[in-house]
Length: 138
Image (cartoon, rainbow, N blue to C red; front, side, top):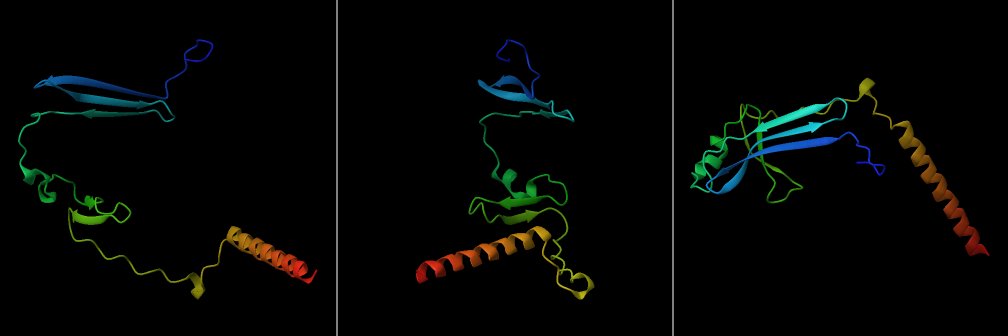
């Protein structure tokens, strides 16, 4: 609501339906609507089989997960900065392709912006050096 009391259009909306199973409230569906252009709607439906029951640990083994081919299972618990691939569904991973040779046999040239930045850094370094030299001589 605006300060003047008028309503504004919602940017996002989340609707959740709930169900009580064994005295535990659980979501059964969630609908997320974004009114940005283009408008998007995402619907999630949950089917609960049991709550707080015993779970077979093999259900969490990578091989027993029903994953689409090409899906990667990554371990980020040990070091999130260096994820470790622990399982992949499908054929073995291909090695990364060799680097592409430079076009026309020449090394790639730096971008124009990079060249301008390097030039300005060199100019500032030169001016700084001249100012220090003049201060030492006086």
